Length: 251
Length: 251
Image 1 (cartoon, chains in turn purple, blue):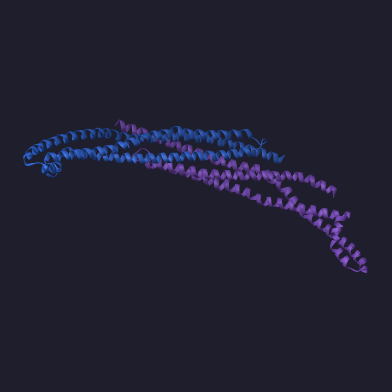
Image 2: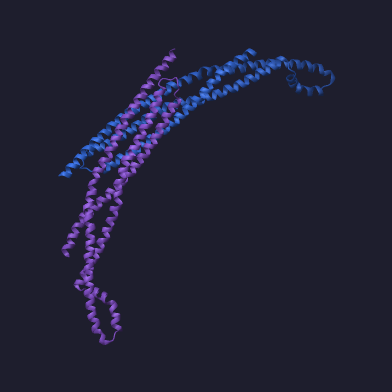
């Protein structure tokens, strides 16, 4: 048992590190999800504000000004670009974020269950160990309900009760041994599972961060490229409108 | 006066159109200012949200992962790009917007003043015209305070009072003519000013809209170009991090 206890201790240090990593990973993931949600809300705000500003220009733009149709088209395309960007973030980044985070509550519950099973196992082990050593306090504890019977019983019955007590102690020791075996089996099952899963989950974070930020960077790159093009178009229309205005003034 | 009245009427139609344009221009400008302010607030929101998301990545990014320094640099440059974009909009678009709109309250007050001066002019003209025609109701009105004196005066004084009354009427007519001249001068001065200024202000809107949206499109084009580049850099770092991760897994 001393050897088993030592082995357990060694395993626990590694396991505790895994749990610390798990908690760090969950905190990071939760923060990333919150920041991503806030970013999505900001994209929505910016989309609305940009749309209102574009519509404002389109409304002021008089039909006889150069490029009326282009300005309307640019406003519409800008609106579509913002919608696409927002939807891509929701449909991909947000959904994969939710899937990733959905693993954590179950693992967290199983870590708590392993802790309870370890307590059960330790308690069964100590109980059995104390029965093996024939410790007085435990014997007294087990004999306690009998002593009332002993006191009440007549003298000739004392020997029978003593034999019964020895049989009872053996039965208790067998039960405790069985209990210890069961508790060990239950604990080791969940322990092996988590010893396997936690490092895997921990390692998976790198790939998840890469995917999340790489797809976001990809959408953004595309979005900024297209948006830059539309701004260039608007710039060109404005230049031509200015030329038209100067020509009108000269006429 | 009939001729002058007709000329005024013709002038007023043109002027009323100018005032309608002025009001349209002020409503458009005020809406543009409001939409631009909302857009600026949205840029601030988006800047904050983007910064939090970039900082989140930088905080999670472990020192031994590929491109730690690049990720920190990208986060810093993204922050600077957003700040620059916001500041450019405030320092240029917003300031020129405020300067443009600052003209309107003064012009609006002068349009209201012209309206009051036109009412004064019309009232002076009608007053003088009624004195010229020797209209009974107006005569009776002027004589009214005298009639109390007449009733109180003895018989021999009646002739003196009558002569006084004629002299008084001539004086009133001269005063009314002077008043008409003054009212006309005051009105025409402000009227000519506004007849000159309102179409100029109205025409200036095209150049202002061109400047506003052309500079905005210019800042945005630059911003989107630089931002697209940073996203491309982030994309590259993520690709290399993924390669590092796969190499570590294989090892």
